[in-house]
Image (cartoon, rainbow, N blue to C red; front, side):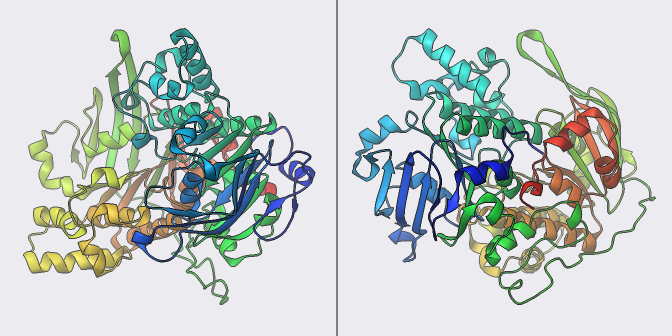
Length: 576
């Protein structure tokens, strides 16, 4: 569904054929711009097993090579190693790591500094921590340019920002990262990789934080850069994204390449069971009402890979749990201007229902969620929760009921105290709302961890010791500790790999089935929303432009903006 100069299969057939296990390439007239042979990376202080084991790959000018796999498979360690950032405690071995004719294994750190950002562009996946909050965006993006007249640097930075899809680049380069949305921050990182027009770009999850329309522009940009002669190594957990632009795919599992080849073969006719598990975990219309996650080994054993969670035929005709009427929020902008974040929003949600809220970055989705929680004051309108006025209440009158409205966010690591253990994180809401003694609180903590699929050993871990999926499970357990009636989930799975995402989505549906809670599910991923939601509200510029049942919105959308969103969603159809 993403426009390209050549259709995927034609382009791949022209450029690639399989050359054997672990190394793919083919009928490409040029030599590879980048080559790796038998790369192994280990961290002796963390364990005896290598994190990356025997990885080989080539990247030719004009092609996009995708490295896919779940979190912990070794993708990001591979990417960082290839630009000399594996870490001081890493032991790196390889038969060959070459950029053109240059042997990168012989470089000193000072020589690496002359290559990173100039000859190899690198796009990190975590814009919030990768951008210096004390530096303006123009300084961040222009750092790789080096010494040049200020006017030249500013012009070069603005071109890169515009190329990365950032509007008003002359204004944005003077702003700080906290003044940008998550999507704009991610595009600023992409601009920093483009500013010197390098021949090789390594992009580690470059579209994770982006809504579908911006994602489409970034993918088209990456495809155009490749078609213009650059080589791109794309690290991604989004197989639909990969299928839409990659020429070749390498599937990583436990640090090794388990399958590789042209995209149409690997994703269209996968040979390895792990690749099939990844593909089966992608949420969409066909997965509604079914479990996404298939336990390892279950497929090989012939286990049903899409078990029903429940047949949901409810009509949801009960009294609404909350209603939003004419909600309006206006923020002050630069130079005495004003920006309307919510503009007369009307919606409701009923007990046990999941309402998906979709829209581009800046459309007002998160502001709506904060207003419902009571963390954002309305300028006009009202919000009623549990049958009573909520938005105008002073906090002291909301506090006795606040435990009934809980949140889970995209970044639990940022919301957790890093010094607290998991048992302390769970103790906080239990001490406030449960009335249980210390022993009973521990038992309830264990019950909550069991509900989200974690064991007793997790109690003594700190957030930094957990994987992203484990942290998200702890976040859900912490939210459930207050026995909520309403759960507001703001992009809770957007940073997770496809298998971990599948586990969390299955978990949310099981919890909803067991407890009857309602969910307001905010996401830019329309596949996730289609899989999970009973109804959908589409937001643009602070307004709800369309809402209805999931089938109505996806199959018979009325508003042009909804159709634009749907048209921008990458799918696996090109390789099916």
